[in-house]
Picture (tube, rainbow, N blue to C red):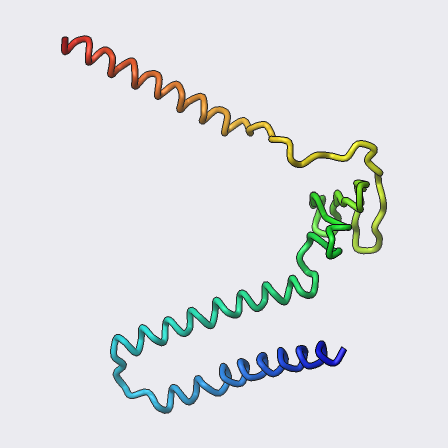
Length: 161
């Protein structure tokens, strides 16, 4: 218990130090910088800004995962998993949830969660899905163009002989 509290305070201290550096460092840079900056100084400043933004993104992603804001595994051993989400409107959605060996279809609104159906036969997501119509069309078109190209090359070879 004590170690968790110490880790929490350590994280809080890091966050406050970063915020302090962000808020105090900018006026210090403005006071120290001469009127003309060299290219290397500008490159370093851009690089540090990029590193700051990337580290902030990773920190927020970690925080969202830590606070369980990201849908997915709830239990440590995949006891409850969100398999699929279908938004119906801004406030309603359908969830397909697996609890152990059972799969449940849930209706979720702002006020309540309703179990709509318990699936007798679980849906297997490892089965390959059929290609969408556009992908199938592009594959046929590509095969047709390759066939036409090979026929054209054969005609050119025959004419050259």
